[in-house]
Image 1 (spheres, rainbow, N blue to C red):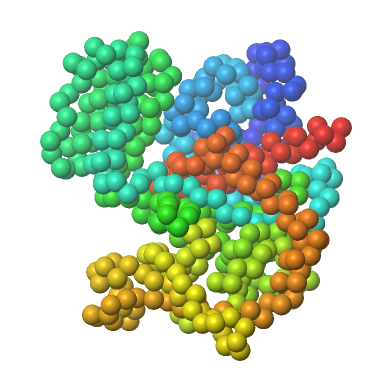
Image 2: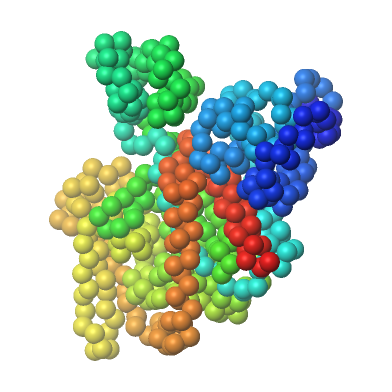
Amino acid sequence: MISNQETLNLSPFTAIYDLVVPKDNQLRQINDLVDFSFVYEELKNKYCLDNGRNAVSPIRMFKYLLLKSIFDLSDIDVVERSKYDMSFKYFLDMAPEDLAIDPSSLTKFRKLRLQDAGLLDLLIQKTVEIALDKKLINSKTIILDATHTKARYNQLSPKEFLMEKSKNVRKAVYQIDESMKGKFPAKTTSNEVIDELAYCEEVILVIEKEAHLVNIPAVREKLNVLKEIVEDYTEQLDYSADPDARVGHKTEDSSFFGYKTHIAMNDERLITAAIVTTGEKSDGKYLQELIEKSQETGMEIETVLGDAAYSEKDNIRYAKDHKLELISKLNPSITHGNRIKEDEFEFNKDAGMYVCKAGHMAIRKARTGKKNVGQNQSQTYYFDINKCKTCPLREGCYKEDAKSKTYSVTIKSTEHKDQEAFQNSDEFKEKAKSRYKIEAKNSELKHRHGYDVATSAGLFGMQIQGAMAIFAVNLKRIRTLMRESE
């Protein structure tokens, strides 16, 4: 139960915090900036209020997850640091002498308490509310983009994935002590995942007996990653890959296996909306939802800025109907003319190619028809016929014995005359220069907050990771804006 969880924890040692956690400490400033009671109000119905043992405060558990994102730590390492780092203890509302939680509690908290909490929208809403209250938002522009995150469980087989992670641990150990080679168990020759799991568990036991290795950060961090993965596989042995992750394409020649986060950000570089999807989803389909979510936070919007993925016909029409200025260059492949089977083929703007519903990308394209002769040109996309022949979705798409598989899009150069004229104007070109801001924000999420790789399996886990990472970067940005306004 969580009754009496929010009472003040009195301790004769709390004065220590005033000595060792300075006023300009990042975590102290975040504590002063945010009233975290909203977490309690949002999650209290997930607990029993009058029965059972006292649970750890949901606010403290939430803050542990936030620390994980701010400092890019594993469950084990964030708990370990909370045992001795006084700024962590202060942020977690712990008395200096309080004991830390068990790391397994964080996994349970994510799975049992955060389901259906709508955490992503809630946390963005809270940060935008803080910024508006402090009059830090003046712009009426949002910038749209999508960033990709690779799945934690990639397209390797379960055995291959476990082998790779145990190898990383052994390699870290050998850099410190090569004599350990004789202490590790013999590698398994079996193809069974359960045998590879047993091998990994033996490796973990061997290293944990070596105090001189376990206490070295380079070894401990990789060991903790292996331990978390072994625990996940033990719970669900049928992982051949992340069950929700999908193949997406970054360019014509490169792809990734994982997820996409579709982001809206204002000119002050605060994220105002985000939607987490599987990796194959098209960026342009989420323009309307990102705008509406941003408006729900209290943002006033007059201008929407994005790359060519957002210049679809429906988006141009939506912007016009809602009196919004759309700064998005036309791409004839997706904005001109009519095309059939729109639900079966999606355009990937990074690669400049269409992708079929099976996830296969066209291998080349060609434009047919003559320009300016009174007839419409077409862009024809050619797919790999060998893949089509064995595709499980070929029925109704590929005709047996056909020598090619193509998909054509009619190009009508007069379809978007107004938008074309606008994108050639000086005003359009000047406003388009702001798009770099969101690319820098994507880089910050990936390289400072671990958003390049998913920390767990499944779409829900990715949404929680996104919620905490975006909350963290928005709070950091608010602190910067406040300093600049002083």
